Structures are given as structure tokens and as C-alpha cells.
Length: 455
Image (cartoon, rainbow, N blue to C red; front, top):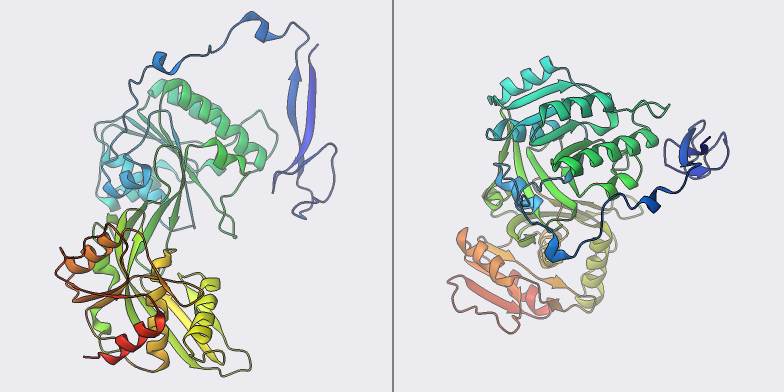
């Protein structure tokens, strides 16, 4: 008779224990441990002695057929995925509730008219999905919809329909009968994902999973969920803003530095092909505390608006607040301004905001940040049609940034007259641009020139 080895797992954080305990030592939650089967030992001869299963192959023996990317009919999504969906791959999309995950995936399913789609929803009925499809004003005769939460029924219907793409919304609502725990628990998510992965690999069918996130912003469920899937996409944005950003956190078939931008409207998500024109508000001209940065997200140049407000501290401790920019980097730049350039900001409140509700991690916007801060501090507006690109070092030097020519070309295309950059390195041809290019290597000289030439 076969021996069964079991262990206890925390359904909140995934911690393992050889026996049941009331309180988890890792996350501190109570009554979250559930017994699960870990290993079954067979009483017969080991199966590997029979020589069954997959056999090792050389690379030149492996067929490369059916490995082309599937076009999603969405340029922004294709860019983030690395060209499209790969057959047999699993894509996990996570994001805040109401951010538009289901809308994005439903639009994808309805746009792929030449593919057979199976859309499985564990959160909505088919009638609710039809209402959303009518709002999107889209229809697809090859898209099948199923409202189901049982993994066994989902896999049975998938084998019967034989779709070209399987969509599951969401993985936290799916459960299997092999584990006695509630849907959304660590064990259920792990087993259901493994079952779907096996189906995807055996049938060479791409799968898109929608995942919930915790209040800390990480994907709900065990960390092994992110290791199992091939691609992890994060859907970001504020509900108060119309823009949505799709980032690749993990991608086995493409770059993780790509970025897709969408605009949420009454008829669903619209692709934003030129986000620079939407993120810049030309009405700010003549106002202090605002500057334009030439940033790079992935391979895409973006011109974004940096807003700063510097005021006298009303309370004893000065406040430092940042939206869309790393607060620790802001404190570092303020220290550089005080130590290297002689500007006393230690007793003042500093607030920083990147307009449009987006978050940018490009270090090349450092020069724009300190320019906006000093513009607000001295109430001196930046002259119009000027943008900036440069990283600021701890010694006050303006360091070179990557893809400088792309930044300059984007500024010139949008009608800017001047751009402040670090002293260009070798191999960069600045003569081909018609825009005025001003180069500096120290912040002291840079500030004198910026605030001396006012329109």
C-alpha cells in the first residue's frame, strides 16, 4: 500500500510546518495552517527504471515550428510582451481592483477574430460579461465564454473546445477538489496553476491569468506563482487619472524594461501611441515650480512634467513628499543642492509630483527635479519650450545618460526650442539636430544659465 507524506502549510504566506500550529511564525496569522499532501511513495519499482517519459535532445534536434508570436492586435500589449503571445506560455496580469485588468483581457479576446478563444470567468456571470462587451462595442464569433470555478471542469471544457487562447479571470477564484481548502488559499493557487500549466504545455496553448494583489501591492498567493508563469505584467494607475501603465515584471520571451500606456474611457482602454503630448500641459508656461523632463521608459522616449512646491515649514519638522518619484532619491538631491550648490532647503517643506499619475524610475530626470525645486523656491518660472535630461551625482556633477539622441529627437519633434543635457560622450552626433543643445557638467554653472535667461 502506498505511503502518503503530508505537511501543514500556512494559507496566508505559504510557510510550512511538520505539525499543525495555531499561529504562523512567519506572518502572525491565526488558524491558517492546512494539511496538504507533499509526497506519495510507491511500493513498486521506481518508474524511472522503465525509461518512460521525455528523452534528452540536442538543440538542433528540436523543432522550432509553431514558436512564432501571436499578434494580440494591440500594439502596446505586443510591445510589453516582446512581440506577442508565445504558444504554450502563461501570462499573469496583476493590478489594483478596478484598474482595468478584466477590461484589457476582454478587449484582447474580442479583438482576436481569427483565433478561437475560451474566456473563463470565476467572478462574473456570462450575462455580466455580455454587458461589458456591449459597453466596449465589440463582438467576436470565435470567442466562447464560461462561468466556472472548478479546475476539473475548466480543463474538461478546454479540451473539448480546443481554443487557441485560454483566459482565466481570476486564478484566485479557481479551486480543485484534490485540496480541502477554500479558493484563493496558497495551496489552491499553487495546485490550480500547476494544473493549468500542464495543460498549456501539453497542448501548446497560451494562457492568460488575472491575479489579485495584496494591500502591500504584491501578487496574492505563494511566491512560487510568479516563478511558474512565463510572464508577469503589472497594471498600474490611479483611479482618479485616466492613464494606465502596463509594465513587465518578468518576461522569459522579451525585455522587462518595456512599458505600455493606455487611456481609460467610456468605451474601454485606448492605446496611447504618443504619450508625451498627453502628459505635458502647455498651460503651465509662466508658472514657477514646473519643468519638463526627457525620460526613457524601456525603448520609448517620454516627455513628462515635473511639478515641485517649496514652502516654509509650518511645523517643526520639514515635510518631504513625493508622488511618482523615489522619496529617497529626492532626499539625496536635496542634500546635493545644499552641500554642493549652497541652497538652504533644510528648513522648508518640499513636495514633488509627476503629472499624469505615472511613476518614472529613470535617473535622467534628476536634473529636471532639482530645476523644478529651485524654480519653486525662488518663484522663478522656467522659460518656455525648454526641457532637461541628466543624472545628478553626489559631488554635484551632471552625469551622462543613455539614449541621449532619442531624448533630443523626441523634444525636437514636440516643438521644444532648447534642451539641457550633460556634456555628450563619444559617438553622439549632435549636429544633426535643429534644436538648441546646451551642455553642462556641474550644477552650479547649470543653475546660473537656466535662471539667468528668462523669457
